[in-house]
Amino acid sequence: MASDKELSDCLKSVEKRAFKRTVYAVRDEDAALDIVQDAMIRLAEKYADRPAAELPLLFQRILSNATMDWFRRQKVRNAVLQNMSDFDADGSGDDFDLLESLETADGMLGAESAAETVSRSQILLLIEGQIGELPARQREAFLLRYWEELDTAETAAVMGCSEGSVKTHCSRAVHALAKALRSKGIVP
Amino acid sequence: MNPLTETNSPMAGHLPKPEALEGQYAQRLTAHLSSGAQALPHDITERLRFSRERALASRRTAVALATAPAVVHAGRAAALGGPPALWLRLASALPLVVLVAGLVFIQHHHDLQQIEVAAEIDSALLADDLPPAAYGDPGFSEFLRNGDAL
Image (tube, rainbow over all chains, first blue to last red; front, side, top):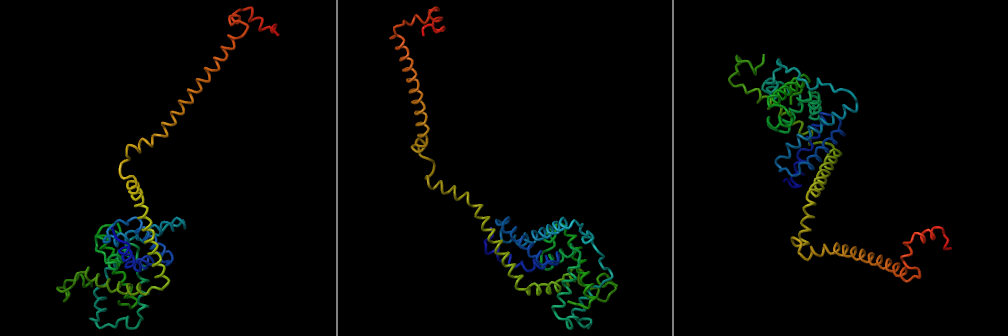
């Protein structure tokens, strides 16, 4: 059973990313704070007997469920069907060259990086904006896999899908982000 | 032309796997996201801290509620020193014994009172000038019903 300090440290280590991840999903800071708080309390009350090592993954799953619950409540409240096309896979951009973007970022092709002319905060805003534009499942897979640094199996467990789906979502998300950011002249 | 799949490219033999490229690119993006997350406004970080403390407080409450019955049980066992002794069992039955004895005594007293009342009536009849056998006489009964005695 995790101690109070272990639980506190766990929450402290994930709370900021959890907040940002939720903001990307719900696009409302107040709602995101409520969702994160709800997830924290659920973790603390219902999984108090779990070992500390299991807490981060449990929290990610609870946060995902809490976010889905928020969307369901919003759907009922507004009596408007959520646009399910948001969950559909979009085009994978087969004609897009990811390697070219990476090479440009490394300066291998001699192109000037946009980071030299645009401030870091502006780049961050653009990246966040593009992440917010991703389909929900792609965004969730991308953030869990690469930001929370879960492995494919853990990401699949949190999302409730297969590992193959996680890989597909991640790949499409990265290609979509790279293509969109490159079109704006942003190379991270 | 996609160099990730093109085999005729000069770099074909040295191309990294698509997943590795994607991971590399994603790490650059998430590095920006991490820097942004670390620079959250003060009010947001304070609300997150409050949420964390509230979660910890609710956990302490949940743990306290879960362990409370065990404490009460332990306290009882400690107070009595194990199973109840024989004299304690007898003492606990004492009120019931007293209650039953009281009821028996009241019933007995009531029976005695009824016997005494019946004896008084019998003695009054026997001591009267009118013999008891007169009450069995039909003529005397008729006399009493008609009120001629008055």
